[in-house]
Amino acid sequence: MPSNIMWVEKYRPTKLTEVIDQKEIISSLQSLLKNQAEMPHLLFSGSAGVGKTTVALCISKQVLDDRWQTYTLELNASDERGINMVRERVKKFSRYAGLEDIPFKIIILDEADEMTADAQTALRRIIEDTSEHCRFILIANNISKIITPIQSRCAVFKFTTIPEKMIVSHLKSITKKEKIKSDDKGLETVSDYSGGDLRHAINLLQATASLGEVSEANVKASAGLTKTKDVTGVLKLALDGKLTNARNKMIELIKVYGMSESDFLKYINRAVFETKANNISEILETIAKYDYRILVGSNPEIQLSALLAELGKFGKK
Image (cartoon, rainbow, N blue to C red; front, side, top):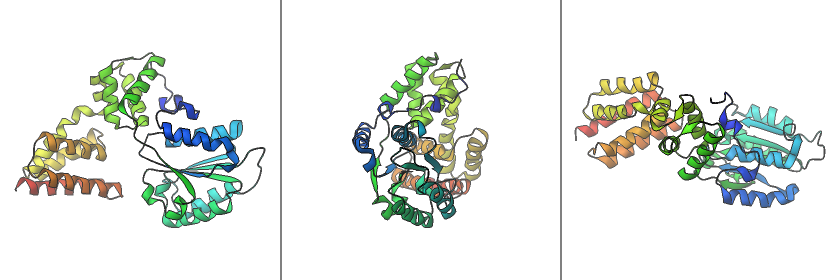
């Protein structure tokens, strides 16, 4: 039977050598850590679930050894994105006090790209003032949202999406350790649905394992993939100008069956090719437009409704 412990934590690497993929980045970081006192501030960028936070924690453990928890401050900047967080929590922790045979304190700011511009400006000054006894590791999905003065003060590492073969191989090793029955098709389905996000893949693997075995059917049931074909129906309704029906079906998929807005857009993008719709390039540009609007914080339900309304115009051409 699967363990109640979250597998993403149970199998999280504790050493840089255990990190999946990212070989060039790991090699560069190991070279930097040969002289820990001269380690620069670090900025990790890349999509979700590719190892950015894990690598930051591995560095902390390697540099600070058994005192890493005492001298490491880990914050999620998307939860506390304003200037008060920088002034109160970061500034207080970064003060020179209580250092015991360690080269410096470490502050890990996850999702730093969600910080406000004022907070980033305040952070830049703290980085400058505390560089002798503190190192920052900033983590961002979108590096373009990090102000240039901060980028210039960090060594930047861009993490890449993990290849499917590596994800499948890692998932297979977990199923063996957990003594869970699985087949290649099931593991490939987990990998395909995760889109290169290893954290998502492991979570989906554990959820599927609770159904008894990791098969394609169980993965689809666990991930809600059995309803993805209904997205094609939503697209057809929208193109036929049946906006109310299309919207009701879209709301059902999201509210009732738990499909995320981003997954809905991914599947409707795929459905465009499967249905061989006319004006395909214009439709894809429209989907991309609404994907961006949701990404920057617009109301998802309103934006998806507007998307369906705009798709109806293409069906009339």
